Amino acid sequence: GESGSGKSFFVIDIMASIARGLPWRDRAVKQGTVAYICAEGAGGFKRRLKAYAEHQGLDLADLPIEVLGDAPNLMETTDTRDLIAALQRVKPSVIVVDTFSQSFIGNENSGEDVGRALGHCKLLHKVTGAPVILVHHSGKDASKGARGWSGLRAAADAEIEIVRIGDDRAATISKMKDGEDGLEFGFK
Image (cartoon, rainbow, N blue to C red):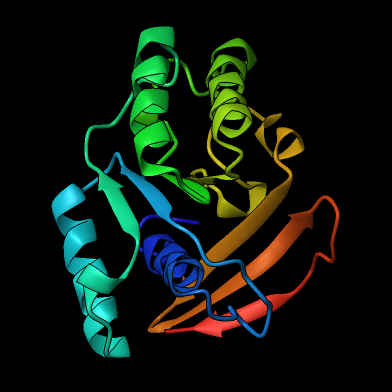
C-alpha cells in the first residue's frame, strides 16, 4: 500500500493476535513470539504499538513482541547472519520486516538485487521456521502494484494490498498461494 495507508497498523493487529494466541478476523492463529524488524520510523512504530495496546486494553509487557530497531541490509551476508543470531535468541513464530525497501541497500528494480535480499529472507525462514512478512510500499501508480522489481509478487507466497480512502482503510488478499484470495477486510 501507499505511504500512510495503514500497513503498519494492519500488521500490528495481526502481530497482537499471534502474540495473544487469539483468532485474527475469525481465523485461528498459533500463539507465539513476534519479531518485528523496524527498519522505518522506529519511534513512530512504538507510538503506534502503544496506541493499539491502549485502544485494545492491553499491557505491552504481556505481549511477546520483540522490536528489533537496527535495520539489517538484507543484501549483505554478514547482516543476515547477525540478524539470524538475534532471531535465534528471540525464537519467533513470525518475523515482520517493515519496510522491505529500507532493509536492503540495492536497486529495488533489479531482479538480481531483490532476489538476493529475498534469498536471505528465505534463509531467515529456513533457520527459524518462522514465516517472514515483508511490509512494502506500492509504486507511484498503485494500480500497478508494489514498488520495484516486477517479479516480487511472483516470488511471494501471499500479498495483501492496503488502501486508504479518507479515514477508511481496506485490506485485500490479492494473492494466497495455498488459500483463498480476494478476501477483503475493512478497518480504521
